[in-house]
Image (tube, rainbow, N blue to C red; front, side, top):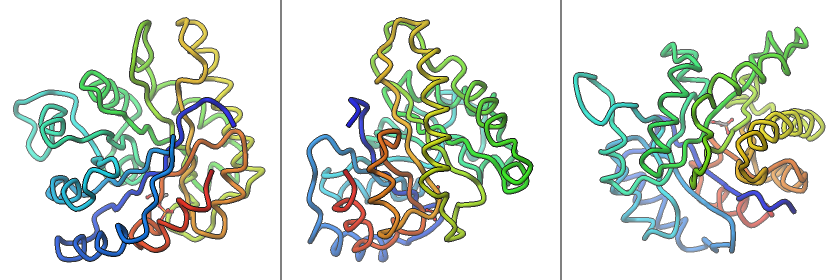
Length: 255
Ligand code: PEP
């Protein structure tokens, strides 16, 4: 197994009310078995950050689904890194394909958000991934390279202590039940790791610093074989993370 950090992160998207979150944790906590060296976390909607932290009894990391790049100011509807830090947020998802698709987030903005997170010791989970049309046109690697380089711009610098995580999420696999197969995941992860190695080496940073996780219809059936791939450092999980029993099973079966 590589020395890169391992993560299993849930993305609840715009789901679960406080009552449902209470029910989630009363089930989840019953069978959650923390594993050495595995960082488990959940990204809830903003209003529930504190509730998730409290109910999870700090046994998991709490995260947000976005982050703004300024500390304060006239940015209606946004939440700043200072505010997130206030709530003990450990990680922030940036550039999720739903943000890129429905809210026009560009890789340039994603990179600014990610850098702001790092500046506040919050781990940015930078999402990249090709659409179905791009996949079918055979342009996956071109798209991945463009999104990776533009989104990570300014997020790697000499002497840094906290690093981004890259989440490879093929858009066609998100919420569709159609996970990429292990050969596809391996090929793209190895490609990303190769690009990262160049960037990290140029800055004299350890090539094990940045983890690459996979997202796209991860479930109890496909998690085992995917985590056996040396190139996979964990998962970003949507649908299956809403089900406490399934999430615990994925944690048990992975790594
Ligand atoms: C996601 O929300 O990032 C995701 C990968 O969703 P799902 O696991 O439901 O495909």
